[in-house]
Image (tube, rainbow, N blue to C red; front, side, top):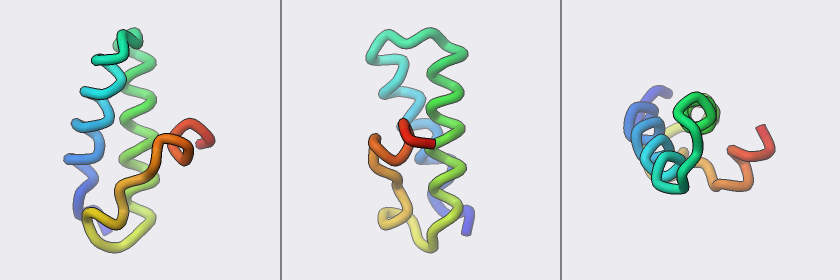
Length: 56
């Protein structure tokens, strides 16, 4: 289910850039978050936790 994948990517990218991560690292973080998001149904329930993103 791709619902929320774009929102997850953009939100995660904003967080990573706001933390001062380099662009390439921020994009990788956001990509991981979006990849995890599409593995679960729905929108808000599919948003991964930071610990899930960092473990992937």
